[in-house]
Image (cartoon, rainbow, N blue to C red; front, side, top):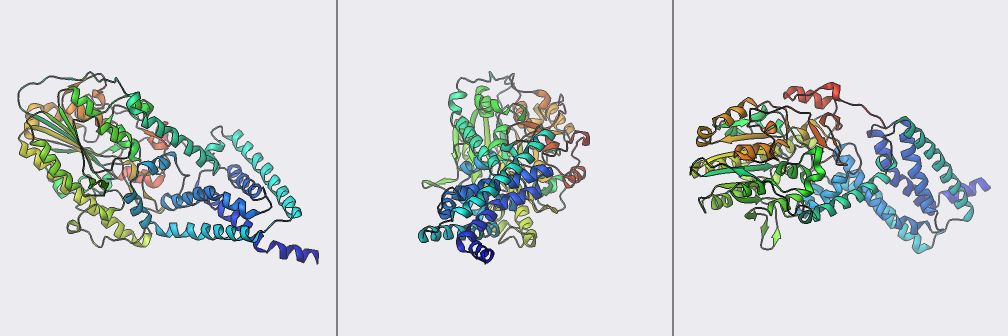
Length: 575
């Protein structure tokens, strides 16, 4: 009889909410033990320690509903983690993802959420009824009997002791194991702290970089006007450009362009915009990224060398280093700002602004153009009349809609090709000695293989996120003046480069001299030297690009597109 009463009590609502709470809170941990390179002991620790914590949490007071409501911040993190797993297939919520919350405009966030509504609906179904049930439990004044609280507390202690034992074994077997890296939600809370620290460093940029000087110089050989343009693409992967071997004709104008040299083996040093673009714009790289808060950008380099400078952006202001670098220009134009608020616009709307700047004076000129490129939602990055590959409207991110997703992305590349042709046409019209360098900040996943990865900015990379589109275009007047630079660019077409080479290449294009310019990392210099390719990970540590979570699928794509690498540099570590 007592046993039956015990079973009936356990099946009452106040116990049902505890079970639901435990399952809902541990759901991200269950996903992570299946997706991460964890040892068995780490898997045990990552399940039992959080289980003990959550169980003790709800037992803190007799009214479990109150404690469930107090756990809403943990539910938000858990829901975020589930959505990240849906997008990327693995990894915890990275530091860079929290930074992205500050640097992503609301319209962009809305487009992304609309495309992943199945994951959003799932977390709502998992957590909203739990919150409603907790509210009802509080209103009914449900209470756990002291005897049951004591028994559950004993269970929690046993779970904690066992989990600590497993964690101790993991630490002994691999010194790289740590709670702040491998136990959810401890690792996510740690990442929030790091993100706040980085944001603070970013906001202090003007103070920490005050007084910085490149001491840049340029010897002007004649009176002919010189114009140099750096175009920064967004999420434009090389494997979707016909210029780089894609079987669809997505870049017909660039492929037929005279004076254009594609750089076929360029890998990004970060798959996040807020780090990759500052690397492109500054002399800093993955190896010395922390010094980026103390130096200025390529805009200042050209100003010191005697150029008028302009920065045209199709990305809303977001208090990031990119915005601060843009403010160094003599003139900044943000085409997203209209009537006092920001809105997403097509990249082609930057061309009239470029025309106005080009022909407003005869001064030597340097222009940076920051595109919106192929950023999600891909189908909104181009005018509908430009769409070449149809249908291109995917209601959600799923394998059954993969063809539509790829069509939309390819259309965005096709439109980028159109915009770049318009920019080059303006430069030709100017009659100046001119050159342009295009480089995207990173690539993009499009459900390409069995992993079902989508988007970018994941803590672990893929080939598709790493291999970025990059090329240089030279006017006939430029080639006549600097034939050796054009010849070097042609020779370096297959150079094993990273996006960190952009700063040095553009400075060398303009024949600027300063101690910060490394000629052996300029793609237009015969002194180019292949160096180990590094990547800045989520904790701002420089690691070999091969040790960023790549798998056999990625190496096969490396082989297909001629990306140079050494298998002996790959490390297989289990935590």
